[in-house]
Image 1 (spheres, rainbow, N blue to C red):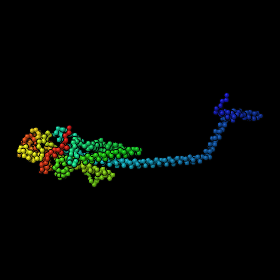
Image 2: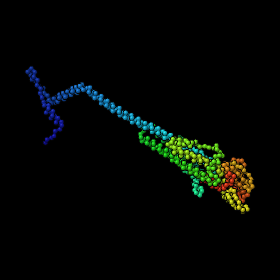
Image 3: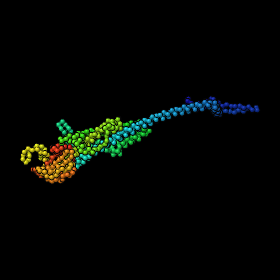
Image 4: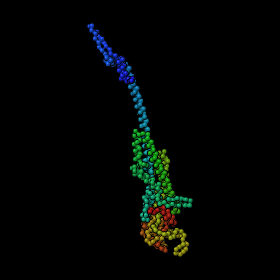
Length: 468
């Protein structure tokens, strides 16, 4: 059976064919000698000869073409060096361009954060102005609640106790014993931001802005980081704009509510009352300075002029709110008694003693003997003594044209010329003078004309609402 030969056999056959056994004969002095060369020996000598002549050829080529080889290597090296330098130049150019973009981004970022910080300071100033403006009225609410034995919420969360809505047929008041949530929320928003970030914007805070500043200044920052920074800054800017929008909405509503409360008394319009109060105490001024001519610079330039104008409007609203609240604080709106029953109203009535029609200049509030009578506002006692049919009577001048009178007292706890505070006890219910039983005859005067006390008491219900 024929077997196919492998490559070792082929090589062996080739060497046997090429290098058959040869003999070299040598004749010397008549003698013949021979040397036998086996195929293996011939193969060895052939290999040595090939290597020797190959080396000679390589050395000869190097000697002859040495200059050309060196020159070729140098050209190759120069070409590689040029390509390397060109690549380095491209990389340097790209780096410079990226670094320039990062510098521009950092400058834009810093300018934006400065605007945001400036806006935050102005918003915080507005909230501080708001809290300062209403501090007196809040103090009166707390004192009223204390004397009434009730509870009252924190001043920041209880700015408006009732909501007043104007309709065509006059003011209609909807009972809402909680303050406007938006104002409370925006107040906490700014205050918490300052506390959490050490007086800087939180939104979620300038701590985040500081971290972003580090990213913007890092030469290795990627485009994704820049986009992330822009997104965060845009979110902060939108949050601030939403905040100022909410504050403006709440202050506009607050002004309307306070004006409606003053209008309920039917004695003077709010603008005239503010003007009268301003003339009486022109030195009592305050609040941050916001120049109308420079209001566009409030938020960092003309680009934010809309924010600046809005900030100016809010500041004016807050100033108006402060004037209105201070005016309301000087009005006798609180009830003089805690528990009473109205037995006779202001206006025409039939006299309880002679049955004839007569004008009743106040409200008769029936209460037990010894019931405490409170001052509905701070003021000065102008009279405390006996006066004809009034019996024991106390008169208090509250300023700004307002006076109150308390008749038929069983006891007087104040003296003429004495300063009384809001909700201070001025006497006790009795039945002195022309009286048919224990009650308080309560009068309210404005500019020398007696007014309807029930209007003041009704308005006071929407300022001094009891908290459960």
